[in-house]
Image (tube, rainbow, N blue to C red):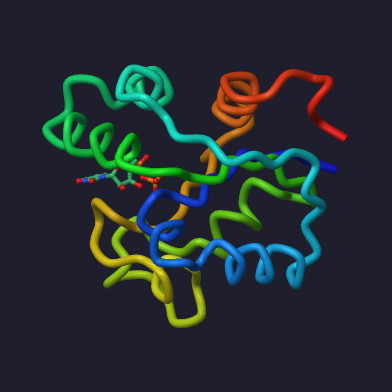
Length: 137
Ligand code: UDP
């Protein structure tokens, strides 16, 4: 079993799509081992996306991620990292395949509904950024 870190981003939460996204998560047989609703500060969003610091979209991205509530989750499944990225689809919703979450719930590259870790090392950092071991059941 593998764990990955996922976010229902502020655009999807604000649009009322958190429930639909969770339903897809359960339908695809992920175990939700951690889940909480947060309203990130700009500084917290900058810390989470530190790997992108200095890139042209960094300010817009962290402003967006701190613009409203989001849902942060730890998902468990066999091959969870790839499985969740496959379910999300491509970063740009207009390029994401039919049936993926970003295609269905995203708007444009800057507001693409969901986040998912891209490798075991980033999953470990991202899970630890938001959850203590005691919160993962
Ligand atoms: N992003 C953006 N403009 C870009 C590239 C990325 O606004 O040109 C945003 C986008 O919302 C993406 C996030 O920055 O989800 C992180 O980028 P990354 O390349 O890590 O994509 P992801 O792993 O989320 O698919």
